[in-house]
Image (tube, rainbow, N blue to C red; front, side, top):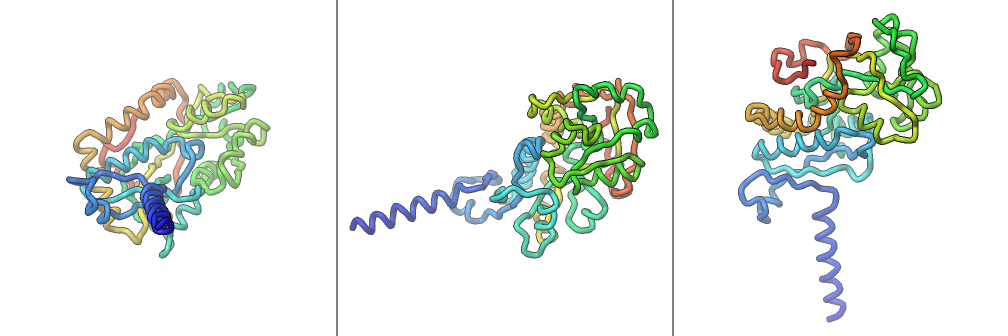
Length: 303
């Protein structure tokens, strides 16, 4: 009898852990607490990233969860067990037996050909508005920068697999790269490059997270290039892509998308003070404008 009780206890513990591990249940229908509702749900697996590596993940996940709920379809979100860099996540998304179903990243023509893009800019295009992190000793290096030629005298830092590398280089701007994200801040501090351009919604979070590195946000210029942060879904899951797009469209229609955007991004946009900066516009050779929903002004941020 003792052995039987022990086996039952072990089985119940295992069942509870299996249900709780790594998942984010999304209530999508009536009676969502029922056993039938849970058994019918389908997993949506996404790459796990730390808040430091993905400072806007809380915002994106709130958008995604509400889109799933609004779609009315029984999905359950689950983060990958191990953290993934962007390139690995894209590989898993495109692979026939991949461990990821969805991710969010800057769009390019190549990615749109390889994966299923949901062409609703989650960030309203803010990812294309860039402000530089600088060392405190170089706080005013951009004071006299007025155009692209002036900026070309300085070197930017970026992660090797980010599309920004090609965008900056194609506009004649020197770039130094790192194989991963976190070392870029030490490289900036050490003078390996002059500036680290970050999106409007990333820069303050990143600065606040590194109080000992004596970094500052540039106050003089902003870079702009047409871009968008999209959800990309695996080609294995066309129905999932359709359901999430339907949920997002309904959120745009009922105003919930804009409410979440303003709640998360309003302070960052105000702090960026874009109207007081010299705006330097760059070409984005990686993304064809005709593929972007530019005919829908409600989807885009305008300073």
